[in-house]
Image (cartoon, rainbow, N blue to C red):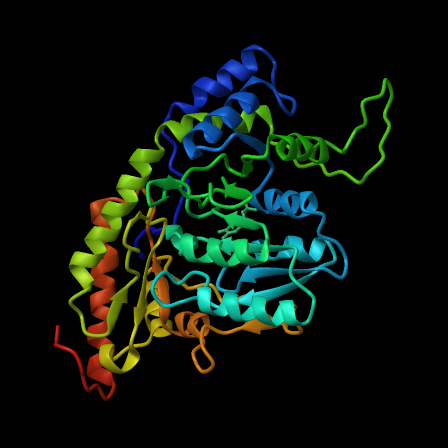
Length: 395
Ligand SMILES: *Cc1c(COP(=O)(O)O)cnc(C)c1O
C-alpha cells in the first residue's frame, strides 16, 4: 500500500469562511457582486496599500483587464518574465499583441534588469517600445523592483506586477503587488490564500479600477436598457467566493508564517547536502515562501532534479519541476527573448536544475519528514548506483 498523497500546495481553510457564506445565504446575496465583493476589495486594497481594487474571476482575468486598460492591441508588444506560468503571458495573446520574453537573474530568479535594459534599448532603436512590462514575483520572491522600476520609468513604460504568487511578501517594507501601474493577485486553489478560484486587480488609479469593473461586467453603458459600445468581459467575482476570500485574508499572516516555517525545516534538513542550493531571500525583503524551491547541481549531488522529482512522485509526493520558461514553449516559439547575459540563460538553467517541494501551510511535520526522508533516500540510492564525485563537502 502506498502512503497517502502529499500535495504541492493544497487549499487551507480556516473554518471562518462558512460565516461569510452563511451570511450571503441568509441575505440571498448569491448572485455576482454584493457586500462581500465590496468589502473584499476594500480589505485587499487596504492590506496592499493601494487606492482601489477590483475582484475578478481569476488572476488571468486581472492581467487581461490590465492590458485592456492600457489599450494593448494587435501589433503592440508587451514584455514579460520568461520564467513563469503561462497565465502571465496568455492575456497578451488574447489582445492580439506580441509577447517578448525577458530572462531571470540568478539571485531572485525574477526578471533580470540587465536583460530588460538591453531589450528596451533595442526596442527603442527600432522605434517599437512595448505597451507594458509584466514583472512576475516567482514562488513568493519579489523581483528587484527598484532597479526594474528605474529602467521602466526611464522609457515611460507602465509595469503590471504579476503578484499571483507573492501576496503577503514585502519588498523594502512595501507590500508586493503595489509597485506597478497595476498589480494582480490570484486566489486559485493552490495559492497562499484561496477563494477556490478568483483574482484581484489593484491600482492607485481609481478611475482605471472603476473602468475595470465596467469592462468586467460586459461593459454595459449607463442606459435604461442593455446598451454596449465596447467589448466587455464576464470577469467579476461572485459574492459567495468573496466571502471565502475575506475569511482567508484574516489568516494571511499565519499562512505566510507557516510557509516560511516549511522552508526553514527543509533548509535545515537538506541544505548541507552537496549540490543543493535553496532559493535565497533578497536583502530587504520578506518572501512569503509560497513554494520552497531549490536547484540541484547534478555533478555535486550525484542526482539530477529530474530524477529527484521522479523519485518523490513515485512515493506519492507531489514535487514539481520549476516552470518551463515561456520562450521555450511551443506556443511562443516565434517570440523574441532576451537572455540575462550573452551566454547566460538563467531561466533555462533554473528549469533544468530546479524543483519545488510540497509547501502547503497545512503540511504536517510528519508529512514534511516523509518528504525529507524520501529526498535523502533518493540521493543515497543515486550515489550508490552512479559514478559520483562530490565536489563540495560530503553529506
Ligand atoms: C496562478 C498564477 C496566475 C494565474 O492566476 P489564475 O487565478 O490561476 O488565473 C498568473 N501568474 C502566475 C505567476 C501564477 O502563479
